[in-house]
Image 1 (cartoon, helix red, strand yellow):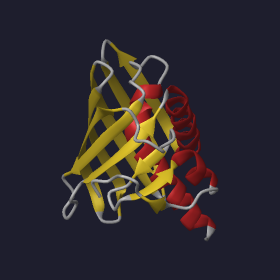
Image 2 (cartoon, one colour):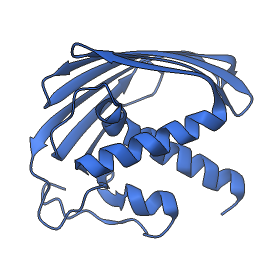
Image 3 (tube, rainbow, N blue to C red):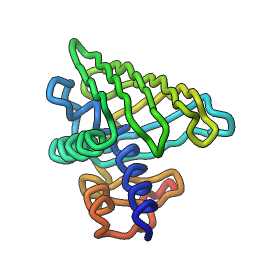
Length: 183
């Protein structure tokens, strides 16, 4: 795998994991309940059909995803302002993504420790892959305990493949078929 492809894969995995872990792991953010989380992402981009995935999370995995995500942003983002107070959060980013300046603002609303909603407004200058502006909605909710045989970091992707975020980011574990009986 080329260095560019590996970096793109790593960034994609971090983005997926951050959909679950970023709000939960920030020091001032409400702590999310450990267990299986469902994440549904919808966007206004033409042709985007959205995405649904689940991830087995515990406190340690939430912290690890935060550290990994913040580390990736540190190298690419000139601004990374993340704030939480009274069940709400805001994220304000300015990052360089493959020659395009990405400006992203997110508003996060928590429902206790079992759900949150993130509204994201992003612009790209110059446009990235033909996209100059995108609005994204991420809704995440706790489903219960992780499935038998799962370990923290196991993420079931929309195609049913399971990867473990700890191992995938380190390149140690290949994707494996889902153990989810609904698939």
